[in-house]
Length: 199
Image 1 (cartoon, rainbow, N blue to C red):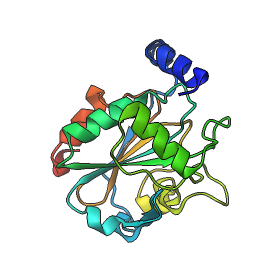
Image 2: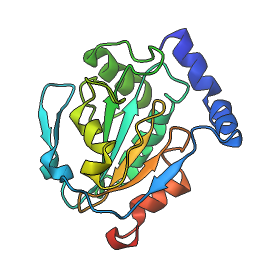
Image 3: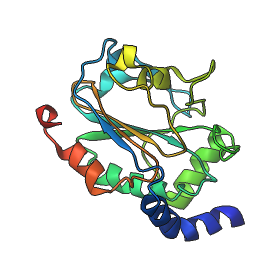
Image 4: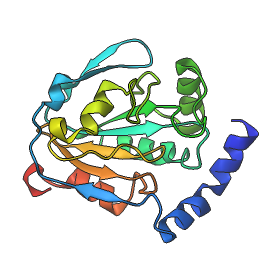
């Protein structure tokens, strides 16, 4: 870890608490609308070059998170790994590294993977670094997540690093959690534990 990364990790608990108290980055959206285009038609390329076809994720919940190594929220990798370990039989987490907010993910795919493994023990899959905000180069997965004509209801793109989108066991987008909502928060874990018809 660089000095900046160590400093951000040290400050994270205070940073996140202040964000929540100030009402920043704490939005939670949910819906039971049905997608027009199936989530299971999508695929992504992982940082090791392998393709992950989302049809292989049927009957599990999926949490998609845009990540960065030099962000005030980077310590959430720790919570995401804890979430991955706790719910590994019913949840797949996929990190989407992106350099969309203030040059906070400048490293290569190899550098990002190494950083995550060494500092946070990350063992859930990471996609190749891409763009998650709405622009011409937006990752196709994030095009689906942020286009209500495709996912059925949501147009909200990530407002910062570590925004979270939850897909249920039927491939429906059910929740959007903004960056300050912790991975192990009661709101997020309740959504993961909810039966598919109770969301």
